[in-house]
Each structure stands twice: as structure tokens, then as C-alpha cells.
Length: 166
Image 1 (cartoon, helix red, strand yellow):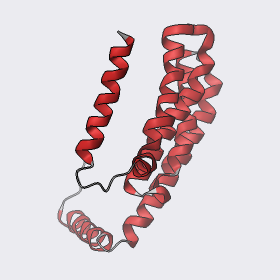
Image 2 (cartoon, helix red, strand yellow):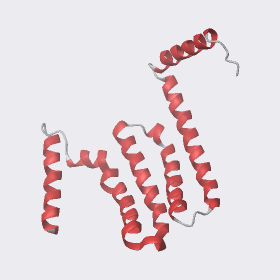
Image 3 (spheres, helix red, strand yellow):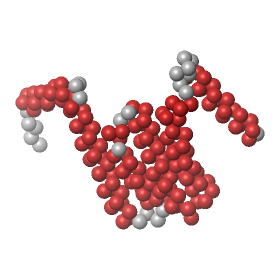
Image 4 (spheres, one colour):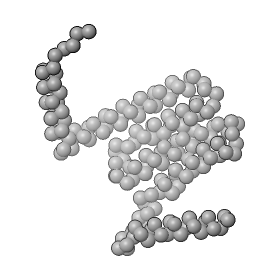
């Protein structure tokens, strides 16, 4: 049964590769260059989760910290690699640590003091993401007209609508 499963997985991957590589432009190097997080980092994070949830149990709650960090960091790397957005996605690495600590808090003893670094990391990650994404959005060619139209519409809305009294 194990040999059949492994052979099926290999044939599935090979068939997908051949389907995507009709013109011969995709090489093994291109696949590894674009999908290395899915191939290496994300499975390692899932492996740590699998070890905790199916094998070790509550004694190994510390496995969730590297599992959460690797899984989220792998997702961040995959998105940044596919869309070439490393300059905008880097706050996801801060969020990865927050996710790992939150999993440790949630499935561990629920030590309330863990929420302090978790909240600090989440706020920093969201703040940096907003600042760098907004800066890129405003500096882009399409960003300025969209922001200008939104400001005009908001100004008209504020001037036209009446103030409600409760």
C-alpha cells in the first residue's frame, strides 16, 4: 500500500509538471526557485503540528512554536516569491513568531503573560504592513488617482450629509 501511494504521488507530480511545461520553458530549477517554500518550509511546519497533534500530545506543546513559525514563514515566502513582493511581505515574518507563540498559548497552559509579546508582535506586524503597503500604493501610478477620488468622495459625503443627533 505504501509503494502504491508513493508511486501515485510521484506520477501526480510528474503529470502536473508535464502539463505545466508544454513549451519546455519550465525546468526543474524554475520549479524549485518558485515553489521552494511549498516543497521544504511549509511541510516542515506541518510536520511539527502533526507530531504534536497525533504522536506526542500535550507533553510536546513546545513543538507548536517552530511549527507555527515555519508554516506562516513558508506561506509568506511563497506569496512573496510568486508575486515578487518581498518589500511588502517582510512583516509576515514578525507575524510568524506571533502565530507560533499564540499556538503555544492556546494549546499550552494559557499563561496570560504570553499575550503581551504576542500582541506587541501582531501590532508591529500590522503597523509595518500598513505603512509599507500604503507607501507603495500611494507611490504607484494607479494609487494616486484612486486615493484622490476617494478623498473627493469622502469630502462630498461629509459636506452633504447631516449630522445625526442622538
